[in-house]
Image (cartoon, rainbow, N blue to C red; front, side, top):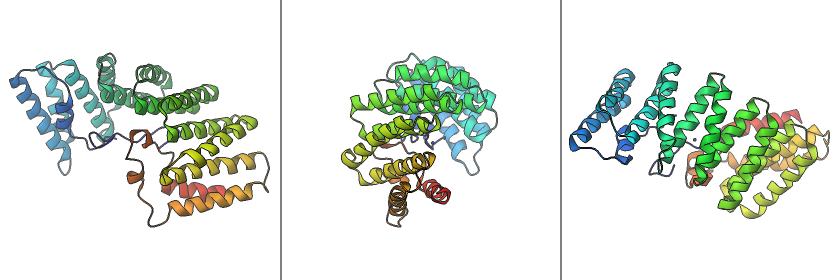
Length: 321
């Protein structure tokens, strides 16, 4: 594959080959929702959401009462956008704080059914699709996750962040099911979509992820071609030095593994040395946190692995060599 600028901080692209209920204000989410309601309805909704947020953020959180407040919203027959968002919030809270996955699934399915055909409702629509697919996978029902993600991908072509996030998620779903050819096709679609939006960093991630899939399939010549393409982009087109260094770690990990897979032990030494230099740079005390690096631009919120996990991975690759 693991999920937003400050107006609404999105989960980082937790997908490919990439690693929630973020503490979004329930009330704030309601106020962002376009609505045509009477002032008395507004007062009821705001009061219930305020109480729900109070119970959720209490120490310790009182999740039962938070859920009761959100469920009470439905008795007022709210507009579709408010109803869909509330179902999503209930699904998020149930997944984050309880083990009641069936009830969470019910709310997320309701949110998806309501939001799927609503225009200008991207965050709710695609957040719901992503979370619902994740829940289906947890329940070992990937056959249900795939059509939801495919529909969401079809609907998200105007939104680079969500389109790429959902492509990564569906590719990972197919890879988990050992459907590597389908995963590779989706990652190729991702490369094309980033060309259209000039999202160079994302293009590099799609290429490297595709190379990883092809290594699993042992398509050595294809792996080499894609790594060469990705390497050229990383060296010449990535301006952000921090993103460049993360991509270099991803690239050199794959290159080292590729050489080892081919039995070219002597060839691997140069790449391994460059990999170790890059991880030392990332682990230096003055290096910014992952949150600072991956939170500035919606097309740069995708991260393969956090730096602590990269460090462990590089160690394992070094030992295997």
